[in-house]
Image (tube, rainbow, N blue to C red; front, top):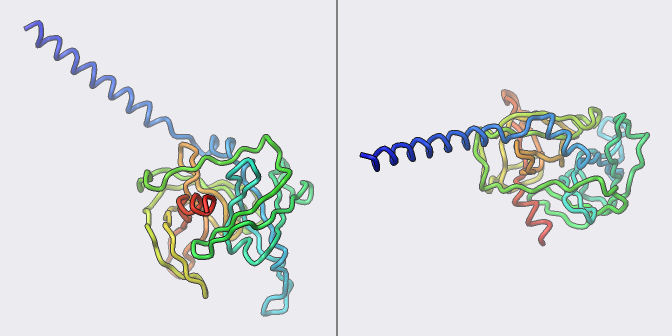
Length: 242
């Protein structure tokens, strides 16, 4: 009888501890404020002046712009190939408190690696302040649909260092897709954290502050409802390692 009572007390204790641990885990995730505070300085504005030219209407097109983020203290920055590709160098703008690009000191970034198939490019920059920390890389295999995600970037190139939130809708392993005349194949993280032109190349974070994708494109065809895609961090790791 005494042993049975002890077993019951032990079982209740185990259940109580499990509930406590579950409660702690449920509230471990950060909110958008925490993600922004931790990582906005690790995100850069990128301008590719090599693409300055004239469009079909004869108007001056001021090149391609986008986002990028620090992945290593040696000065390595990840962005999309369609942002930095076809250039040897790009302009890199660090975060400015007043959000005015013309009042911050820009840096020159050199393209050191590219992967056109997954739409990624690796840039090397010198002179990045030591206070700027590289992002923490997550693991695609650990992701679950329904997780909270947060995107930081520069929608339309004008609304600098904006943060949006959403959830992971699905993981699309080795997904083949086309944009314009280009064909791609990559693991995509489908999510509904809103992005637009200028967000390209920016980081997608989970609630624990891990970078798990590179914001790359949104479905804009008629009837599309907030369908956004980020190239999985597994491809970022491959590009850095290779």
